[in-house]
Length: 456
Image (cartoon, rainbow, N blue to C red; front, side):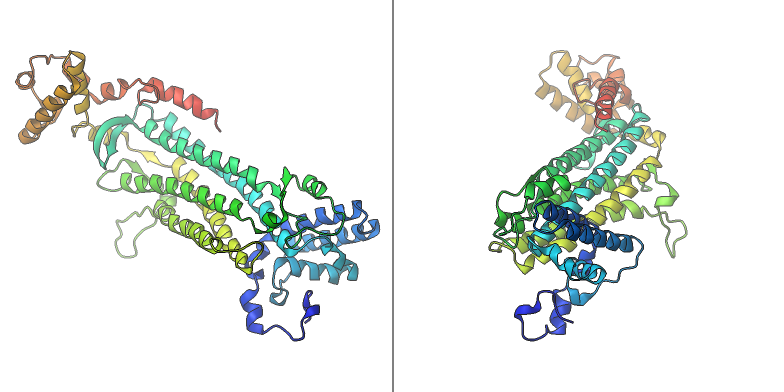
């Protein structure tokens, strides 16, 4: 079958080359965007008098017919037509005759494919922002119910200081808020129109690029035609943002895996989000958070892959750029699936408040507060730090926790200790005393929740 671009060639393309270079197996995902861009382009061609009004209406009607067939699953894509653009153009010519060939006036596949990807990524970025807000809502709902729930806070994965579980969850809320802001900001680079740049140098036809931008709701057009067809920064930016987002999901997933283990038992994950073992009947495996953690690697790979493709390319378009799509599609689908699962996973998570509360009474995470206790009484903090370090060593040797020590034991280390030290050492006091802005005290968390509510 003759290629739509085959006039210059004297022999058919090798079938292996057809298979190797064709992108229709994956760029068919851009079918709706390709038709959307074509409808705007042909509207502009008609308005500018480049084609007649009758031709414009006939092409638009043909494109809309193809769109209907696409939505009803009637279309079969053909490898011999290489990509989504040529497949749709061939379908259009079959539908309305030779006039369909006028659709490609004043454009190239180079600016056409770039436009499709801008349209696709704009749509998907907005979807991801909505999904992120659902995750934030789930975190916020759990936080509201756990302001007074206390668990050990960790540094270096060692017990550090007691914190409110709400405070811990809200840390992830703000991580995802930054991810959302990055996605929102990236729309400024996504929402720029390449169409009308031609293959690389523009076109001789008197087109109106601004009109196409208006029809497609783009904020602006690329000011340089070579940049328009070769720019993939907007995809790189998306993949970079996606990688950071996956890091945040992975860190939260790691904590859910740890917290749900027999050793911690801080949370119970809903059965609907866990699986069993084929051999050990007692097992309840946290497969969803584990897989969320594991999928981070593929998103990193998509980013590194495109960086590698782009690093040595001269201007303008090169066939290498065909490799920009599969990683983008993969990352979008990975994020959509991950975020869609994460929200209900958090919603249905049961918090074992008693296990958390018990944990903070069986460690030395309240040690900083006795140092603060002595500092308030005038002991330089560095000296107080050394005194408390010795008390901790003593308590460990005696097999006791700080609340178990008697007053006479405390006084052997400093005469400044009084009975009120025991109040200082309770988990509730330790958490409640941290009233600095952004701290873990209940009042600060309530303010943080109000602030968070304004972001979703």
